[in-house]
Image (cartoon, rainbow, N blue to C red; front, side, top):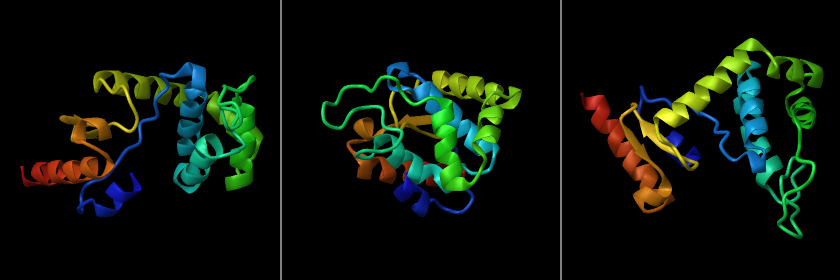
Length: 160
């Protein structure tokens, strides 16, 4: 996504829609955390660090044990995620947790789920261009190809 965003033409923006479909890997908690961070204005600031905290080797919010590959038990909860955001962004953990339970965050969680369902997205990343074209690395032939195709589709849409 970083590669794609750096190459986007003027007037084209990206919107991240966090998925929740893999409950066994804690995706609903991370979806809520991203939406909460966005509501608090710190999502972009912490995005790369959050990715590493979950998927990086020995990340503090890792869902799997790096030695065994097995899912951890218990998985990180919203309070653990809030402590991460407090460390990385200085948003107090209590404020983060409180915001994560707000009506506006709950509404955005439901909107994200509905958007993903309407786009028939079943993997990440899935890129949707102008609400019309859905692609992901495997359908485009790889990561480089998905960037090339997304840019081409964006240019076509700008010409209309």
